[in-house]
Length: 203
Length: 245
Image (cartoon, rainbow over all chains, first blue to last red; front, side, top):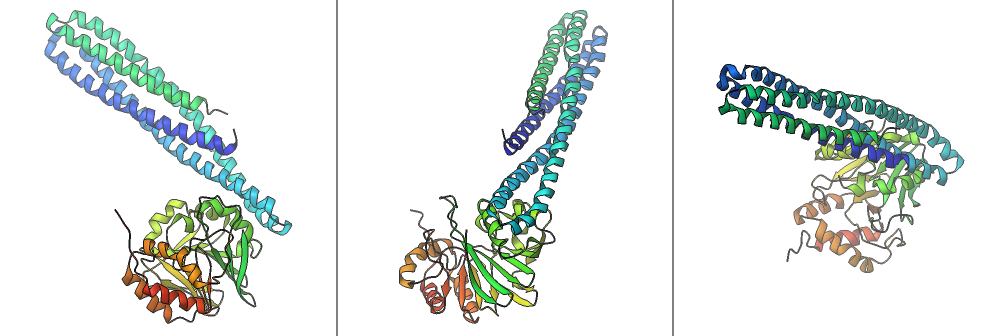
């Protein structure tokens, strides 16, 4: 794969990451709504579901964490897309300057040389910038994924708490546990997709 | 890419670049122009991305990269100026002269270093190291913001898409037989030029100029009596016609 193709693959992959993150963010908003509904449910269930009330705060925290992480990673991804696009254009220009060089006389070649060097240095700078941000992106995704493992714990604890609640509320509280678990899995899947897109770009 | 000199008086020169044999088949052939005077050059309608390397190779045979002080884009079309992002990375301290109304559109081609000099609707002037060039309004011919370049000293009008012909890659640089040339121009002018009123205003404006050469962006160049032949033909032509049947 030549430099131009690599740059093209980078901006396509990073755009995919931004898209996966945007989907994860939408699910995190759902998670926030689940948490608010669960809190209302816990209030109605009264003292038997007091533990559940605490759990809802934790769910809300996870939702906020995911939304914030997605925003941060999306921001980096957007900048990366721009840089990769710029790198693609720069490599295109370098390829064209190669043609100019090979078709030119010595005097014209001398004129092209400083432009070529400047643009090549710029390409190198962009490439390094992209690679270092790539690492940052992967680390951020890994960190978020790690914190999201808590959704499964929350789900299990919710089920335990629902057993202690009065029978009228048990089904609803179990449903909250299911929804939390499901949302966590879906967010994780999108983060994993994003991660896979980034891993293959690593130099 | 071939190059011919249209005019030379001392260090003042007009060059036309075109008839590129390496051009991809489905890309319309374009004429690019460069005017130089002393150590100062301006490229008129520098062309699309696809011909950038051929253009750069060609112009460097006649000027130094640092002497290219300006680009001119008659309007916003890709065959006119989509190479802007590439020139932008190669030129130092250059300006782009183009219709003011197209600035925000043209910037989509990429322009971080080149300075944009918008030409307002009434036209403007450019000083090429002592040679005065006029930006002549040609709005709606065919673009809603459109200018041509007139060099009074060389008596050359760069007429953008006016006078354009869809011709073979090996066609002559100059119109030889006007009657034979008409079929190559007629559909283009009828279909691309949207307004008879704009056309008539432009003809009236241009008839006041002393023109020896009329240089369009596509096809052969009009010289001497062919300029008048063209203006008379264009005057009679009903434009702005498209069939939607």
